[in-house]
Image: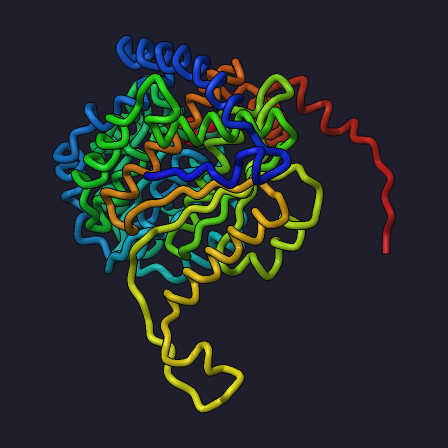
Length: 431
Ligand SMILES: O=P(O)(O)OC[C@H]1O[C@](O)(CO)[C@@H](O)[C@@H]1O
């Protein structure tokens, strides 16, 4: 990935960061890089995620998925980091295999998807690092039951990716299911470039080696200066802007195929940096669509936002036919790609003209190599930002309260949190 932070400079935007401040911040970046390198060298929890390009064996994954490689529909049952990485990769790339992600427990939505599956041509990819996530386990019980009701032996059509131990591990052993292990020391939101994100990608026929090569190339750019490393330039700039008031980071890819990148990034950024009353709020947007819904706010609302554009510099195109309608002449005989490119450049310039900070993250095209580099680059940017914020980037203790309360509400144990649910303050206004 390439990063252009020109429109985040104080000469262009407010909030903005001066060149001098960036150079001073670069001293902290050097210290942070030293910390990251040490963490990677010692395979420390979290930092180990940045070693994945060297650690992951694509052949191990390809061998494990062989029994289900013929699947026409790949149903991934997982949530958060156990779904978003795989969804980002498979939603970005073409495949004849349909990838379905059950990452919620909305009964009508789950039924909608299961009602459309031909189970004899489908497979189940159940993913949970902990092996205890209620939504994933509940959906897995529902999906396997659907296979059984369709007379299809789910044990022949299921692959499991989970931690070294836990209920899913036991289930895989009990039924002798093909299974892969979530690498130790790799938090869910940093696991897209491991079996967690790659099983679905493999069944969809994507080039795992190219994904890892792209990530490895990005890893080679990690250095002690933000001026030599696109990932660190992005991480440091977002941190600096947050400190100057840009507490919201709206990620706006200019490609439908990259829409899920913004969703994946939202978990990465929120769950990693949202601690100790700190952290930038990620917002998902899409270009050109959200020019017609959000741009008004980004250009003329509170000066509390950074807009992160993600743009592939090359890609497919489609001609716009010529027209004899005079008013449309400027569109006719051009292409949708030309229009989208103009929209992107105009929107980027419109924010700069209004003095609103924005950063451009560029990839050459949407393919496995570039996607691997983008995912790795944004992960490294996040790790760097976490060092600068001084937070524990790799834990997410705040999510446990609701999990305990949920479990208690379902009779799954005694938790103080459950009692608090009943103590809700009410002020109902009814129709
Ligand atoms: O992979 P698991 O353990 O099922 O967890 C799923 C997701 O839930 C979280 O733990 C948050 O609840 C995320 O960090 C994680 O990606």
